[in-house]
Structure formats: structure tokens, C-alpha cells
Length: 328
Image 1: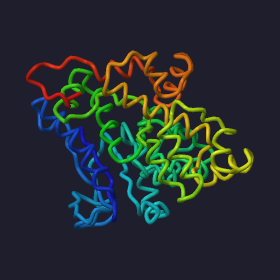
Image 2: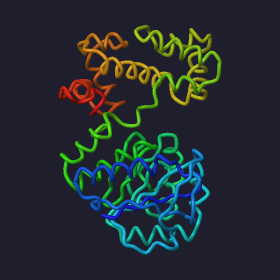
Image 3: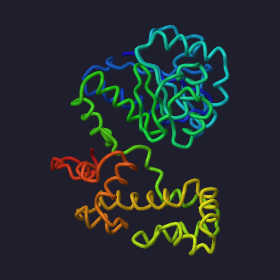
Image 4: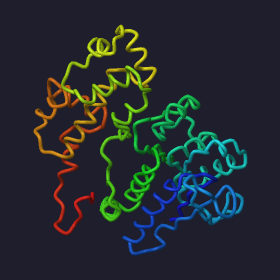
């Protein structure tokens, strides 16, 4: 199968080499170097300077490439906007969409597909930080902001950066079955099925988005007092504000409601406890501020897409004695 990755100036290097390495490892595991033939197609010839400053050699350009492709993935990068309005590129992507078996994107590469009209009426995802913009600019597209990758017919889109590897692994499973995909995941020390969605954006990171203010002080309090009363009235009193003003200012500075941030903080802490300990789930729920296990379980599923017990099972699978404990 001929796999192509589209690159452009300031492309995110890992959007290219991550999926490429997954396909290369699959070919190695199959004992057939030609099982996946990966190439890089550039928007310009020669060496392309990536967002990290490293340079990437392209095999062909959109003007010179002639071979028929099986799969085309458009990478993302901070300068994606500089190529999305290119009519020649849009036309090339439209032609490829009509001839390849699969077309898709990694991270913000979805914006290039959207500009070519390929996402219209489809279910897609992109980097969590760009999903709102993608949805706003493409109201006829259903953006699933918390998904790692989305398959909609022959269209495949992935979330940010490393999620391109998850997408490539899913394609390997689709092509050659679960057993091969598991071997590739184990060799590359990556999840076969990453638990949850784009919930890697933790409460501690979210707390850093607010300015140093009464709101940031409240966020710090929440993170350190998960079992306390963290209702809006209690938090507003701590901030010295009316409830209405507190809720308004919190949403403005933190980008979420107080209740959403509290839930994120509690489930983020619970996730780490599930990974790192064998505390019974009822005690764990109490430790992070949930009065009953049912409310905890619903919040956990809402945030991570799996139950706490299923999430724990992922981290307690037995490993052969010779296998590194970090391996999936």
C-alpha cells in the first residue's frame, strides 16, 4: 500500500514521522518492507523546514506526484493557514479524495481538507485547541472535539500531534487485524486503544490559563481541596464576589464554568489514582469529592469515555516477565 503524507513549510514534524513510523513498523512486523510504502509529498520541492526547525526531504510535490495512492494524510502545523487558501492545492486534494481508498488529516491538517470541501457533511476531529474554530468556520461539519480520531466512511481525521499515531495504528488494524496492531503498539511503547478522549488537557494545565487573580487563587484552592464544598456559592464567597459575578468572571478567565472546572479537577485526580493505586473505587470516589459511586462513575465516563473499572483494567493487565512495564 502506498501511503502519502502531505507536508508544507512549518509543518509539525511529529505529524509526519509519527504515522510514518507506525506504518514502517507494521511492514517490519509483516516481514515485508513493501507492505506499506510511505512517502512525503510537499507543497514545494526540496527541503521543507518544519516547525521545530528540522528539515524534511520530500519525495515529490503536489505538482510532480503521479503515482496512485492508497492513503493520503494531510499533516498539521502552526502555519496551516498559509496553505489552506491555495486553489491548486485544493484542486489536488479534491482529485485525490476521488481516487484514494482513504483520505484524512492529522491535527490541524483538517483545515486544509475543509478548505477543499472534503469535510462537508462529515464527522471529524482535530486538535482540542482548534476544534471550536473548525466548527465555527465549517457549520456543515460535525466536529467531535474530544475524540482521538474519527472514521467517517473513507475520511479519517485525528486529534493533535501524537494522535496521528493512534490513527495510523487504527488503519493498520483495519488492514491487517488486531494481532498485528497489538504487536506494533507493543514495539513502539504506545497504547493500542488510548483510554478516553482528548482529556490529556488536565486541570492543572487548565488552571494555568487564568490570569493571576482571585480566580486563579480559587482554582488553586479547588485543586488542593477536592473533598471540600466546591459549589458556586462556596467558591464565590472565597473569591469575595457575588455568585453571578463570580460565575461570569470565572468563565471569562478560565474558559469553563466553575462546575466544569471542579469536575475536571476531580476526574483528573481520580484518573491518576486509578492508574497508580489499587484503592477500591468507592473509597477513590470519596477521596476526590464524590458522595456516591454512581455520580463519580457518570462524571468519569463523561470526561474519559470509559468507566473507572475499564480504565483501571487497562493499567493492570499482566505483562510477560521479559516485557518492559511501560509497554502496552
